[in-house]
Length: 474
Image (cartoon, rainbow, N blue to C red; front, side):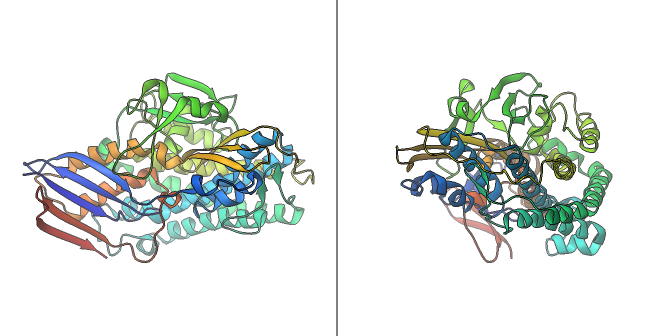
């Protein structure tokens, strides 16, 4: 008799998904699937729209990472226009993208993951949330809220709105930075630095408690992919992609947005509406890879800022070669944040940052364009085709979460096989299976839409679909 365990929905994620565990007759896990259960459809209903509308439309895909969609979309449009944007516009976009990264990582680390890390995987679920963290660790609770506010307020200052700003447009941005806004952001930096340093210190003090999770949370050899600069430092907005193997050997390098579709394919599985990205020369699933903070730090030789470089050196000492355990996404996320704060300070001190030349203009000069950028969770790619009037005839988006999709499924299977025994599911085991997904911080908002309560219900069924047991969390 085979059995299945269904976790629906998975809690403390951005969006809506579920997990199914398939048990053999002995009650051991022999397979697992992570389901993204609703369709996005933006590629199809953007057809017929003028290409210059695409950034504003594409930002509506997600309320968590709209800036990444704005930037990748604008870069695809600029490829169609065949223009290079002004230096100041590029710097302002970079700052906007880094601000989004900081606030999104703060949401992931403090709001979604820290209850497990600080209160414990087996702690009472009634208290295992941000308010429980704030009660037990008030300084960390304030730091998390402050870092999220820091990133969102920069987005608001630059783009006039915290969510879905229309400031990024094909050719650059719509409004220059004023000296008043620059000084306001500079004044916010000390608190942001303090918050990240506190989080790093606290994380390092508790990791010894999670040796078992580190060993079994999506800890396996894989490819890694992310953007880097020519000097091999980490990059979020420009640069080109590098793909390395589990031993750190370069598999592919200099992958521009125009080469992306030649080298990266998308597989479809019957249990999920999110596609599975893979490196075409290796085939699927052998060519599956990981992106996001862990991959960025594994690929880069440096961060390009002094404080983050010091942390990167410590990170690279975790393993001999690329860091394989996805548990360390949390550490990599904090180093990303430190880099983001440092880089924002560096950009604000650019002598040309207040320049008013911030936009290039042109019409349709190519019938196809592609753009890529790093979203908080990994690489995001937009590819458009237009007719001679500039109307979209075809669009394809490769979402960052889809590039981690196969690794998340493998991670769930590895974690469940280790912790689930004899078909028994305690709350702590359930939480660990959810927690391995949270290490990747998937942004299911890019493909799902849910509101209201996020209850958790697990049903245990036999191979005939007969009900055996129920556990429920409200």
